[in-house]
Image 1 (cartoon, rainbow, N blue to C red):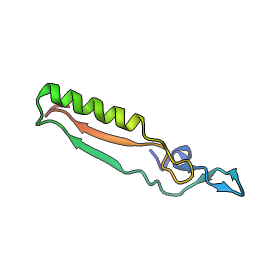
Image 2 (cartoon, rainbow, N blue to C red):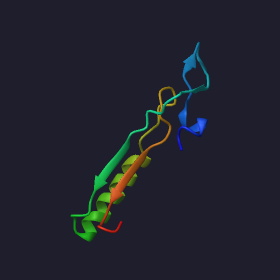
Image 3 (spheres, rainbow, N blue to C red):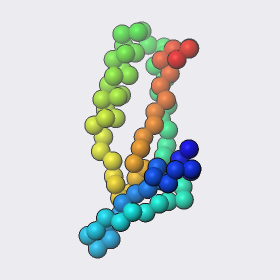
Length: 79
């Protein structure tokens, strides 16, 4: 999907103090993997919420990208 959509590979480096759009051939996206399936239900929900809160407060570097993040979370054998 990322290779098909240029906007997902776009960064905005500064050239002479002006932001310029740059589309990269490859994406620097790294998908994180978290397995919380062994935790009790309450602890699992707390960890998932803490992860979501942490990710939501991380800034993006518009100059170097990537400008999206992905994290797969396993919360049980079925989810």
